[in-house]
Length: 259
Length: 259
Image (tube, rainbow over all chains, first blue to last red; front, side):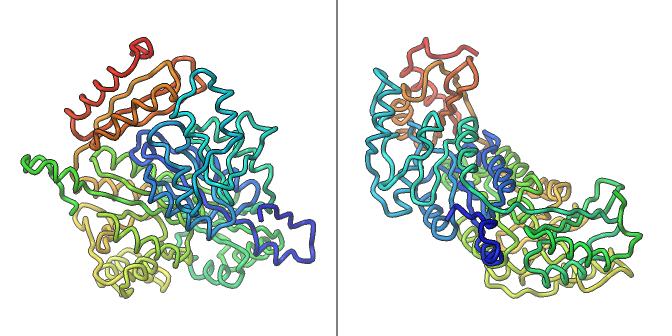
């Protein structure tokens, strides 16, 4: 499911494009919603997924509430190919992610022998019940990156469980990205001297007629250089070029700001 | 619902604190999820809500997909006192927010006579069907800030509809914030020289026994100055002080990094 190398089978390119890996991110932490800590983990993952061409469908940021997290995990795990969670995996009272994932996927929370041993090795004499709680994971949990990472990454079915500490999340996420393959989006931009109102119908027509092309328009009011930026994106270069051509033909040439 | 001035009735303080305004944010836009544009609207709103003491429960970022937005709007509108949406309200094909809100709340999309007139005034000769689409809003829509704002803010029941252009969102959101009252959280921080493992049980006890106090712990591994930051937050100063006192008494004084 996560290995989609569309170039290995060019004859089924169309089908593979339609089957592109979809993803969702669940950020867990009161500190983000209360504004105590600035969100930077989803931000980092969004950029990484863009680079490898995974189709991110949704980001939810929720509180450290077991029922809330469980409900989101259940829905996301069913609807998307992969789910990435961030936060709530330490040893303190507000770390409820593992229990919530177990609840959401109807799995038991069990002690993982390998994690247990690793925690004992790491903490030595300082081991205590709070720390050992970190060895309890949903049944069927896999450990990834045992060779590559200092501490392995936990995967429960299609849910990848990342720590909230940005430094650790980044290392582990980069490792996961190296396992994913996709087709990155190609982006073309046009800057126009007219407002959205004068191009809306043209863009709607091209967008509707070319389903593999995504057209965006972003008005700006704080610069004199242009009034609206039009973006055209596709994973297919030919389709992209055709869409850009069609838009250019529909515009008054005087409206286009030269690069 | 949005006017909670807890100080006006001190005898029911407890009840009012429990009834604090809850909020959710729905950010709408493919451009944010694809990483083309950095999210800054939720970021701005989170800080504003923190200042006035509104309890933000959730942020969802979703694509320009009518069914997806409608489903989130329905749930958020039922579960939280106020919902803030950002994006998708312009005149182009990807602007589906109004139709989605109508669908989510089971309302008809109707032409708003006042909005229609304002758009005609604004666009003059350049008026066209794409622009006039912006006058279609869910039935029962109210316009707020008719005197205070250059263009009014749309509210549909408890859903406040903000534009995606950050400059406009900020002006309108600041206006809405001025209508909300709450009790801001008070925050105390302690920096400790020990890891989370050695304080987890203490924090869990205080957190469980003091439900109006929220305790967080954030490990750091990229500085020598401290190993973990403990935050204690409450809207009640007395409770906050008591919690801080109880934590300090449970810690070895040598563990605390002096400010």
